[in-house]
Image (cartoon, rainbow, N blue to C red; front, top):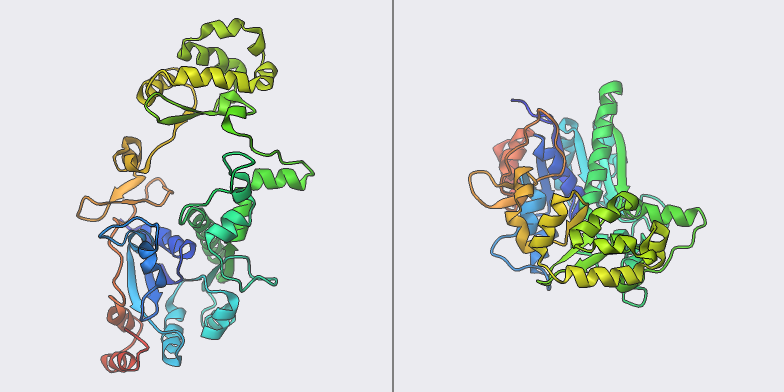
Amino acid sequence: MQRMFEGLTVLDCASFIAAPAAATILADFGAEVIKIEPPTGDPFRHLPRLPGNPKCEHNWAWMLESRNKQGLALDLSTADGQAVLYRMVPRADVFITNFPPAVRRRLGIAYRNLAPLNERLIYASFTGYGEHGQEANKPGFDSNAWWARSGMMDLVRPDSAGPPARSLPGMGDHPSALALFGAIVAALYRRERTGKGAHVGTSLMANGVWSNGLMVQARLCGATIPKRPPREQTFNAMTNHYCCRDGRWLILSLLKEDREWPVLLECLGREELAADPRFATTPDRHARARELSAVFDEVFAGKNLADWRAILDAHGLIFGVVAEVDELPGDRQMLENDVLVPFQGEGMLTINSPIWIEGEKKVEPRHPPQIGQHSDEVLRKFGCDETEIRRLRACGAVR
């Protein structure tokens, strides 16, 4: 069966994390993705070695972001390396980079350098802070450009007096990768209609503000954003989180209160609260949310999470388990919906890209390339003979 992007050639000239992840999604649907990294290797390969990151015999970061790709080690700071790229671009469909604009110009890989070589090329650029303005060349990671700059870091605190919360590695990169993937696919659709390529892109900053869109739009409309209170002083007990007897947490998401209030009381075995005048109406419950949360705290502390999960599920109430990462490899719902899938021919799992299309079968995940693992193979495909390959290796342009 031919996959959706089979025959599509993608040059992934990017690092850390969103832009390569967008290329991974294209690879999942059958595109041939060539990972271009410097002869010393993509610096992202070293992420697991940084202090505080999980320690493991496997390079888990590289496995996730570079699966199903071919590896070409190419020194784009040299004229020979650039010449190889210029040979590849006319036969490529998509070029992805996250170098800042000034670096692109210095390496000769700016849109103005590559577009004349292939009028059908989709040139996808990803930045920290956008293509224009005084911060266009400022490097950015999702912790600062997505999480901190968007206002989310300030808003997501345990309470207004607590310190801002730190983001997790890659937390903003992966949703941002979906935005870049969407831009690429939209440009491919336009190319089908016009025959012309395009320069498309997005940024961590733009995706961070989009992710924080509800609060930012409220502020744009002139609203005052309330400070987050401690959970014991919540504005709404029906959307608060509660600790169970075994120390595990769950969070309620009961927004249809008039209908769900009596059902919740039945689940909790506190039907008598239906006649309590303090909580008679939704406005009453909101006005006395602290009192009601204190009641719920006592009730939820009486049973383990598994017990509450069964009770709430049986009554169709909307809630979420505050999952621990150690539980995820065995999460049946994730396994049955291919959120987690095995690498080809083995039992080790990886994370599937979060898109499915009826009738489309994704590529089985294959392990990522070693540095320059497919350099000779790729060079031959793009017209280099053995003499030229030896010369490129000898001068250090290719590893």
